[in-house]
Image 1 (cartoon, rainbow, N blue to C red):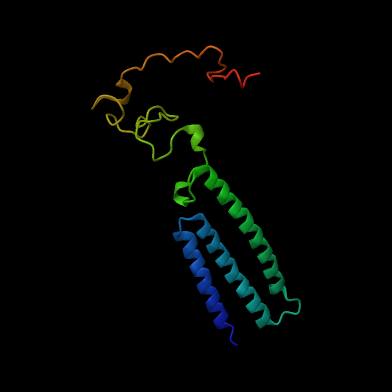
Image 2 (cartoon, helix red, strand yellow):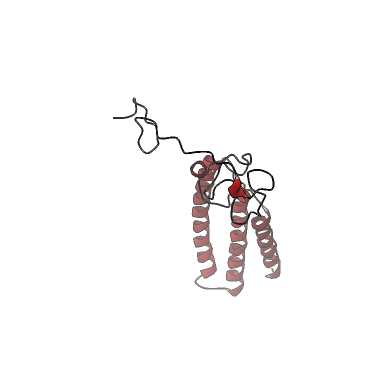
Length: 170
């Protein structure tokens, strides 16, 4: 058998894996594409080990190591995907660009405009926002919006602004 046939099959498998990693948005399909690329490398290692008639069978031994590492990668990758799905309710890679937790900073990108001020103040008042496009009267700069007044004082019996339930305290 010629060495060209398995090498072509391996190149096709690797190309399909690269396409899957670059084009897919689902994290599980990306993990499957990585496995496809690893299997293409394994096929090359075994084919060239047989073709070169290596006495130590180094290609086959390296293939066994790659299989073990791939199994560990699948286990760890699926654990990460399940953890992300539990926290974010999605495994869409395009929606997982940031590592912050949505509960700590406010609503996500699907929230209505103006619902959360965020770390830089009201929405639309960041350094890249042109004058007149922020909240407030039409055409007015973002700093000219009416003052909401002083913040409410903390409730009695609370520590640091968090209200304690009497049944949970103590």
